[in-house]
Image (cartoon, rainbow, N blue to C red):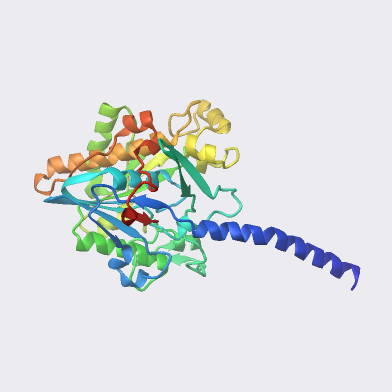
Amino acid sequence: MNYIVKIKLILLGLACLIAIPASFLLYQHRHFKIPVVQGPGVTQVVQLSHYLPGLKGTRADTPVFILQGKEPGGKILIMANTHSNEPAGLLTAIIFIENAVVQQGTLYIIPVFNNSGSRTTKPGDGYPLYFDIKTPWGKRRFRMGNRNASPLDQWPDPDVYIHYPDRQLLSFIDARNTNRTWPGRPNGLLMEKVTFAAMELLRREKVDLAVDLHGAETMFPVTNCIVAPEKSIKLATLTSLTVKALEGFDNHVEPSPSRFRGLSHREIGDYSETLPFLLEAPIPFLDQPTGPKTVDLLLQGKDPFLLRLAKKKKLFVPYDESGWPMAKRVGQHCSVILELIRQYSRKNPDRAIKLTNVPRYKEVVAKGVGYFFLNPEKADKKKIVDI
């Protein structure tokens, strides 16, 4: 065996020593279960495949929590983790699932919309695989996911993604992005099936409002806002003005672009009677000019490089030494959702939605996100749903 061959074998062995433990960690992450407690208001849990059987048995299938009031009324769908590297939406959804009690109307919640994306990570960016939220009874662990579905579940990527049905040309990676594949199709790519199933839910159940929870960089203009198409813009504006006047935080309105296809806030409105809204909360973790992508940055939103940029007025949100902690992001989502419901119900009393026991912005900021989580260890095992 010559010298060159020996060197190659040694390097191959070293590569295996690195790859095998890393593969095990990624396998654990992909199969990690997040237990969610069915709160007092949950009346039923179904899988998204209930609306499209073709999803059954795939990693794209995901739980849908239903909270139905005793009185008939309007209906709202809340979707989180469309992009699983924007976890404030997931935490908000769990607060609603574990606390909300609906008196009138029906609330549908999909806490992990892109289930595949929540079980992968972003190569090369050093994302943490997990993060912990402190609670009065200990810590609760969550998976940190990626913006797009895992290639283990949908592959290969096309050279160019051709959006259906408009045939707009999008980036190849958008084929795995569930905020580019709306309204979807039943026989399309796996992520197109996910968005088609959600459209079927909206159409069959005659859902009035749909809220898609997201997070955006502080350096991105469309952040800290409600994105809405023409049919939803009035309700979004009323909500924005009200939360600013009564609760003291900014949440401006951005119009949905009519020529950029595949977005939830565009396609839901165009292909159903539902009024769609997309909520963007600031997430400094996603900004490029930051320090290491640590759990602390994810949860506290504090970064010295962003602070320098803020002093030079390069950011699109207020930013100081306090950063943008998770409690502010989740609190904003809670208040905006509740205000959208209130404003809609006030204008449509025959389709009113009434619910209680969900905190608003100031309470979440004061007590912390984990204060509102139930302890899965103390809950009835029949009430646990793993996501």
